[in-house]
Length: 168
Image 1 (tube, one colour):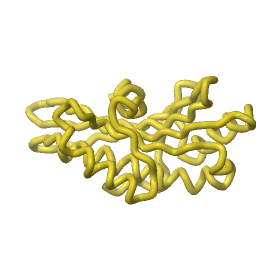
Image 2 (cartoon, one colour):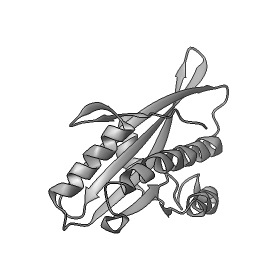
Image 3 (cartoon, rainbow, N blue to C red):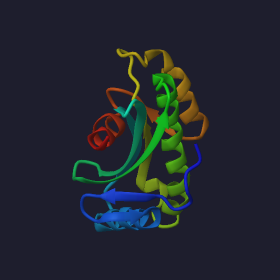
Image 4 (tube, helix red, strand yellow):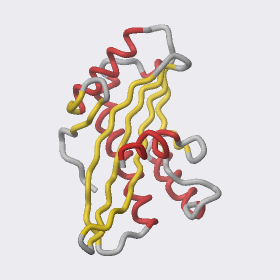
């Protein structure tokens, strides 16, 4: 899935912003407490809606900057696709690919303003050992790790299963 060059995000605090503005907001948040350590989380969730006999899939990606023990800010974006027959496996792959694409866009921008030593980056994947996605864990975690990122799955993937899910 190819994403546009300038992604649009929404923030409860700042409204509609582009990816560069989001990175500036993240940098400002880090500068407010430069001795703290941060966790940058990117996670995507999807939801299928039936509209006039067609299936619409909403993919929501959340970007969260968490100041360990002292608050967080989050940003989210939504994209819609139409499919004839939604398949869970395809949705999970697309969720993971979207999260990776967002990470690949914002991480280089963020590294220009915030030292990589100030934060851990995690890609949260909405799969878990107890649900219907349990057979896919190794595959999608391998995709994330193969791209040089740390993957978290349920119950630790709150960026996808809670924050992004809130906006699907």
